[in-house]
Length: 94
Image (cartoon, rainbow, N blue to C red; front, side, top):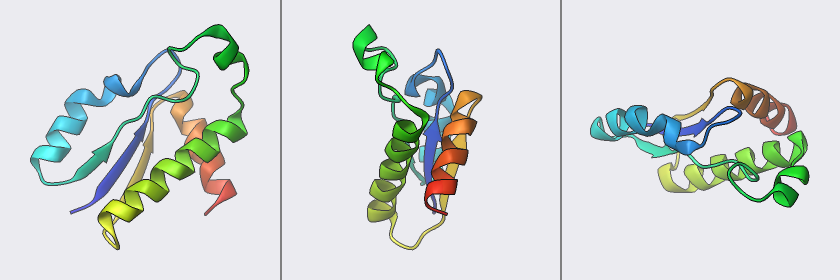
């Protein structure tokens, strides 16, 4: 089985992957669909968000997933703006 880290886009939260996450878990996969920092929080937190910060958050999610799944395949998926985040994460730590 694989591990999936699902990164949402702008104006969303991890909840947007609930249906997909349920399907993946039903097939035996491990799934994480976190809320990006600053999304759904207060305005000061949102103003402190940077692409580099979101990339590091995404990498931390991948590292946490790797600790759970060991050598199993890890799939990192981004929706809309989440695609920018996973691209920045991949550039920071291929």
